[in-house]
Length: 371
Length: 198
Image (cartoon, rainbow over all chains, first blue to last red):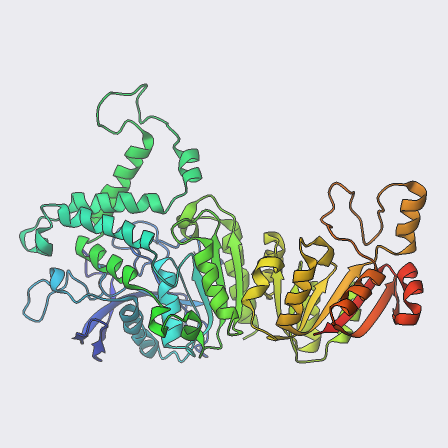
């Protein structure tokens, strides 16, 4: 799945005990950086990627040759200004862009497949914490990410309360809802129902469950958009035809669009990784880690929080983001919150939404001035 | 900065923790933060105003005082400020209760409907008063529950709320309101400022 060239890797020697009980060591974390670390080492921002993201935040991704997933937000003079800040992002463990995952080989040189240990959001951030030591950074200026990236932000500051000055969870939740789990299960079922999945052992015989993975992506993609956004972009427009064809080809543009999204995804993503990462999201329940009291997760941090949600995001709706604000306010934490008006759905955080980008930029730059 | 904000700022000691409810573009917050080292938070319903506050580097939460004050613990702020917004709530009594629960003290300012210009406007023109502090027409005003300085004075007394200081503002003149001059102040002030505690 990944090509070794152009991928920077940190080998973590220190054993990491996973939530599932297993311990991993000498495992790789693939990362990328943008901008430069200043002499005081106080300008670093750790960005966490979402379900299908990777360490290539901005610029051209050298593996896919496409724009990085957060190119609108990260880069010179952008909201997360790489002229000013040192941006670090790493591929989550369980992923498929170079970090330790199910497509790697076990100590017996056999590809893990579903023998890879089940990982959690907690495991992901504990693994990524090693990057701070690697760069000699005592305290990050900020941590941020949207969706599953936001979950990692919340878990990171809970685990390491004095390791970041500012904290920006975006379009996220502190606990995966039944609806979130349901959509992820739909995706996993599509993958495992593909006869090429072969209980996860597909790499050994060079076929992969591409059809199942494509369906998983198509279903998920719908949840990232809003009804209004879809209606305005596609409506009932037909795909390169004058009239309905009375068959099961893609008559409608929306069908063709989803099929395309599914097919390009298969080229860059591993089906087993999709199973592992969605599982990690489903297991995420930060309040449960603190006996049902979410505030307790943040009781030891003095960090400044800024939480952002989007009006048309029905996957991680405003109320779930506000629940985090409420938990922080109830312990007197320094927390700001804004809901951005956008009809682009959950994907808003990845897109050119000027109000979002200016809020992000202003918060970061003003907080940095106060440093 | 308008005189009202200067008067409010003078009521707050340095280094305190303050919540500005309906903080608008954050002018008062910025002043308190920069000049009195106040640990300041804002609550604001308008997305545009929230963005302006963020651009000023202020910590602000987008929200509605009637629904969102309840997330703050009891007495978690030294002062809670509510500037010229009380009359715009559906339930001003609930908001006052919440301000005094969340803040050790509250500073509430009200546009005075008993101001002589307001009374003259209604008396002689026979139309809904429009003044500097009440600039909107009857059909587009956000104000639902107008009151006079006298009304508010009686209201807080009836609720056993302690008044530490009550000030009358008329243009740039500030004066103290007490029981004996209440009638006069109610006629000549266009704004009342109350420092209260429960």
